[in-house]
Length: 350
Image (cartoon, rainbow, N blue to C red; front, side, top):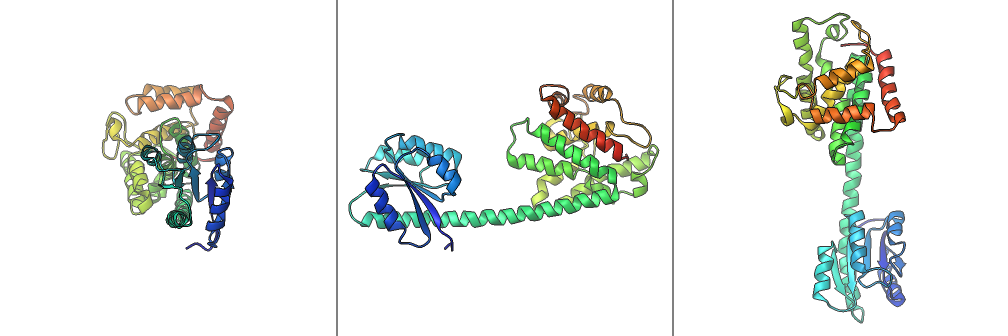
């Protein structure tokens, strides 16, 4: 059991009910009751007071209890709600369960039903305590993962300073494209991490090749191409980065199937890889290199558009060009381009 008090919001039109339930439940030292006579401010209280459980009157004076239940479950999916009925009603009970109620309890005279209520409350609060501990553990795992990613990023910069600046740009722009798509937070996070670490495999590439001032020979270029497989092998052994490693492996696949390492084509290429491939090319063309200065913005955009449907996913190219050329606030565009210009001025390599 927790050593802190867990908060229960009791919403009921009957003041005597509120007093009775508050007095009974607060006999137990781990429970704190927040009474409320109407639906007004209910959502605000849940937000502000970190409520662990709601005990809800089905019939409220200012709002239908079922509608409030639906609102609560839509906003706070993991928050359990026990619905209180004044009298047994089979259809109301079915409606409540269909709307996400943890349980329904008909109000009776005497302390017997309060004991039943307490048993339900205890079960709910135990579940909530377990969920809270699980979230804390997940948060610690996430913090450890971020530390691992930061360490890997530092290794990239030690081997190839250009890649560090380039990787930050690719991360930011890939995330901007991802946010234009109907993706979950988890999917966006995978793309963000993969974009940041997409060149991690360059740790295994000779520094002489990475920092060569002129054009690469064919053997040197084949050596460079190995960085995607090396990146995959580096990340695939980290359990939380399994999907990220696949995105990294395929970020040089071409939409027409002529890319590497596996010659995947079209939508068989992971979405994150297709996004990163576009931004990676854009950042490379927009940066100064030992063998050429950065290309003019108009030339870069024309090159991306020319290769739409060949090298790059056409729908993603359209989204990216909209981000750069219009349909977004000017200051957002200026911010994106400023980051690329700064990186181009300070980081040079293949």
